[in-house]
Amino acid sequence: MKKYLFLLLISLLVVSCSKVKVEGNIKGGSPLERLEFIEASGVATLPLVNLGVDEKGNFKGEFNAPKNGMYAMTYAGKMNFIYLKKGQTLKVYGDAATFPEIYKIEGDAKKNNDFITETQKYLQSYSSKLNMQLLQKKESDFLVDIKKIYADLEKNLDTTADKIGPDSDVVKLKKDELTTNILTFLAQYESTHGQAIGDPSYKVSKTFSDYENSLTKNNDRMVEELPVYRNYLLNKLGQNFQNFAVKQKDKDSASMSTIFARFLATEKDMSQKTKDYLLAFVIAKFDLNPYTSDVEKVKKVSEEYIKDSEVKKDLNSAINAVFGLKIGDEIPKVSLVKLDGKTGYIEADGKPTLVMTYASWNPYIAQSTIPVLKEVVNFYKSKVNFAFVNVDDTKDQFTKTANAMLKGIPGSNLYAEGGLASEYAKKFFIYGFKIPGFFLVDKNGKVASQTFYNLGDAKFVEEMNKISGLQAPTVNPQAQLQNQLLQQNHNADSAKTK
Image 1 (cartoon, rainbow, N blue to C red):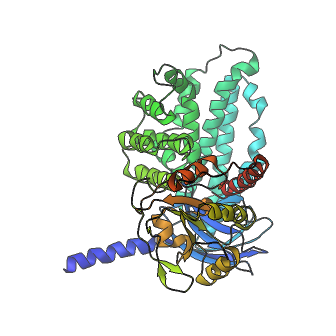
Image 2: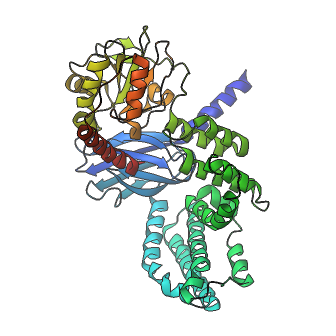
Image 3: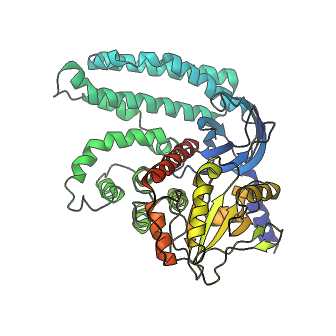
């Protein structure tokens, strides 16, 4: 018994130590904007926390950090990067006009991020040396120059590290980033030098290739930590992959990731870890589209070809986030709160249900969604139930929002306690960039559609007609265009915050 208790305590300690606590102030910040932290080196790159800012610009929260490394910090459509370690406490300050592009940091993460900021300034001031004139130099002179640039930048990293005192892992990460930048410039020289000098037959020498290969000795570490390194490798493989792809008999029907997985199988000198990260990158980039991709085929490629359990887990998180609950599965039974404070659920009572997830801090709901929602409800209410699930930070805010925004619209008003950290958000794969979102539940309580983000979407209307047995009137083309433009603006802003 003592042994099991000890193991339990150890597991609890591990979970607690992975927490990052964050608080701060954004001067002039708006409650309509949200602050998100996103793990930047993984495959899924999904928000780990979504924090509200009060009327004074204050925010506070915590989240589980998957690992020590770079995280994206987003606010009001802008993004910057910050290095975080498990168990850290940090305070972040800025001005709404420039945050997070410019910010001040205090707490455990200060030294590491001061180091990153200083080295980045030097790199930007030095970047003018990496120019088109350098790409036109003969190969031997180019190599001399690029090696000197590399040595100068690496020396600056060491000097700055001695002055500020960051963790060794952060210094190593910045050196890997530097190496990747040099490798990318080498690849650019190789692909463009022949054109620049008017010699299309130009090929780099063995000396050039040997130098390039010497910079990839930490390949597995860099492919795991740096998305920019994955990009470099994909660009290097680009032409060979294209030559392989055009020879595939099913090139017009097979997915991009399926063909790329076959191609990687021919790369005998490449490690499995590198293959896993590159394939996950391609799946995320080309096949995570709920409107055009078959989720089962995407999952099959992941299961068949990706061996690393962490990469597979990360990719599955992205698949779930994009595609949502599987059509045909029973919806999770999650306790929600009704306006009167009593417990409520999303339930089927012999009629299908349209579920809308929303929050007051999304500015597009009132101006573009609610007017169309009223029309949808009025037309389908005889055959379809409606449930409006709020994911605001507090029940008080839910009450105000539901009473103001949804007053007079037939349906169940429900609150997911905890907002985007609630059980509802976790089990239904709800993120800030998916709000407002709509999905259908059939009369037996099973998922009946993908998640939609535009009530004017022809596919949404088709699904509503099918599940209700009604036939909606044709939408006025001009009104439909206006709704699509509003939704495009919403999607563009959401994409910036991802």
